Image 1 (cartoon, one colour):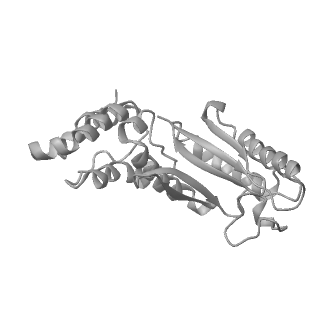
Image 2 (image 1 turned 180 degrees about the vertical axis):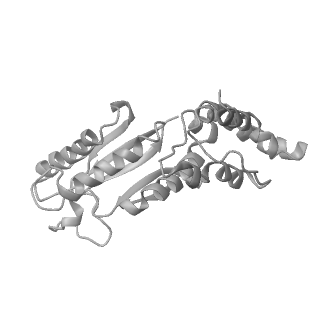
Length: 241
C-alpha cells in the first residue's frame, strides 16, 4: 500500500472520530458515523471517493462534515470524474448520497448540459433526482428513435451514471396529444425502452420503464395538443440500497 492509499485508509477509519467532541455528540450521530465508516471503507481504500483526504476536517454538523470530505477534489483530481464509491449508499443513507451525487455530477457535467432536480420524499429528504438536460431527450412525431442532441444527451448521462454504481434509474416515456390512446401507450413505452437500451447500464439498475402516453404533459401545456416538448423521456435517479 503506497503512502497516499495508506493515508486515505487511515482517514477512512478515523474520520468519524475527528468530529466527536463529547459523549453527547457521539450519542447524537453514532448511527451515521458507524454506518458511514462501514459503508464507505471499500471506496475510501480504493481512493475513489476523494483526493484531498490530507486536509483538516472542520468540526461542524453531520451534513457539512460529510460534504467537506467528499466535495473537495479538483486540483489533485486533474478533472477526472470521481464517484462516491461502492458501499457509500448504505453508509450515508439515500438522501445524503443523492445530495452529494447531485453536487458532484453538476460540478463535473454542468458545462455539458446536465442538471439535477431534487425530488423530496415524505420526510423532506431527497428521495430521487430528476435529470434535466439541455435539449432534453426529445423525439419527432411518431418516433422512438434517438437522433442528434437526444442521442448525445443519453450518452452524456450514461457516462455520468457509470460513476455511481449504487443507483438505479426509472425512465418515463411521454407523447403529445396526437394519435390514438393505443398508439400513444405503445409509443411512450417504446421511447422509455429505447433510452434504457441506449444508456448501456446493467438491466439490474433499471428500476422501471413506463409509458405515460399523453397523461403527464409539461406544466402549462395542453395534453390534447401537438406540443413538441411533450414528446420526451424523463429519467429519475434513485438509491439502490
